[in-house]
Length: 251
Image (tube, rainbow, N blue to C red; front, side, top):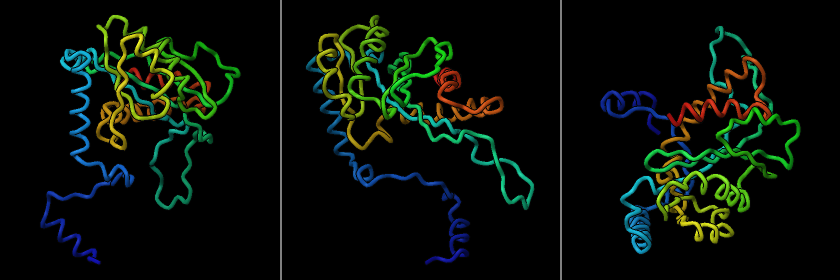
């Protein structure tokens, strides 16, 4: 193996090479090829052109929705401490609970109200005023979306808030099973074209994954840290912190 000195001299000879923290990439994602992506775009163009070619020329008629999990324990990774301190503590939530949020926007920048999916079977002690007005709240046993929750969001949020947009409209989603069955009839009747993004390519193909969630999670950590100065973040107080993070991000 190269020695530490070899690595140091190699970096000195090549200043354009820097150390970076790598991100884990699954085998299936690593096997995605340019040819399959180009074929996906060609199929998309052919499919939409057969329905209404003007959609691809109008960013206000192209939407993307995606969901991501936000942890109640959003404490900071590093803090200042005296040299030699054996243990460094930071107050935070002991819960490992994740609240999943679904975000949707058009290519022209129109954001549909987000959806928060709480884990559990019932809302106990929730004060509804803590849920900001421009949002949709629901629950599922494991906290993830399913066919019925996604259909509920389509009917009560997406369809109503895009009523001003010329039909048909294109809604790009991932290939999750919740996006592939019972809502098809509703979409067909209401001029919504559900189209799945290519599998195992969301890390560079999913617009919200690439361009919004990283910023939103950073803002969420800031918001949660402010909450932690007063009280530990719980499911009851999550919505207020998320509201601040979401509204800051979409600006």
